[in-house]
Length: 241
Image (cartoon, rainbow, N blue to C red; front, side):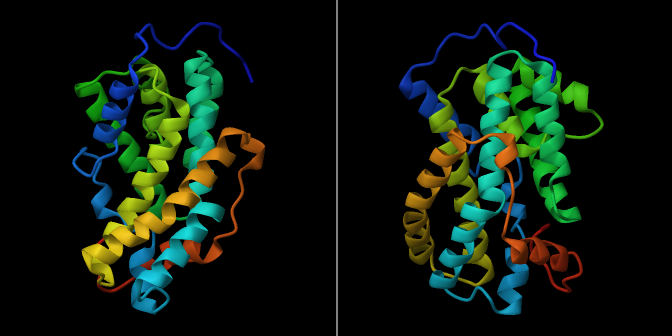
């Protein structure tokens, strides 16, 4: 890898309150990335009968966080953040290309790529993130995968890496719980209890990602990958993945 010297941006260090505010804004359901339209294959396992309750949903999402896209995305986010913060543009591009190439199905590729493109566009039009804009230009016509887009924007704004990776995983889990509330269906209270129960797992996966490298990326949630493939031909669908 070629390493470029220099910092990614001259933005001033935000206060703790500003960091929290930015992450809550960027990763909230109202931020225009279309997260509500994706279920990560969950819609298929609801129809197939694997996920039918809060308990089975918690088990399913726990595995995705620990052994699937949750863990991989967290490692990619950490690597992308550090490359952007240190001005290593070539390394950052390699992380972004890897993140997009790792998607196991057509719909998962759409899920990560479309959200990443929408996130980069929304940030460019509002908050601004020069390294993210540069990366998007370098990768075009391919998009920046969503976890890498979030990582680069956070690095440009000099947000806390620890808080960024945990906030990303929390939003990832919460979005899938929201999909399950609609698809199973579950009550809102059951959905919130699931998010509560997943919180320790989110923290553990985030902590592991902070000391991992790209060589540690790997998954074992094969049924989730197969679910995303099966969803492509599901007859009745509410979600795009």
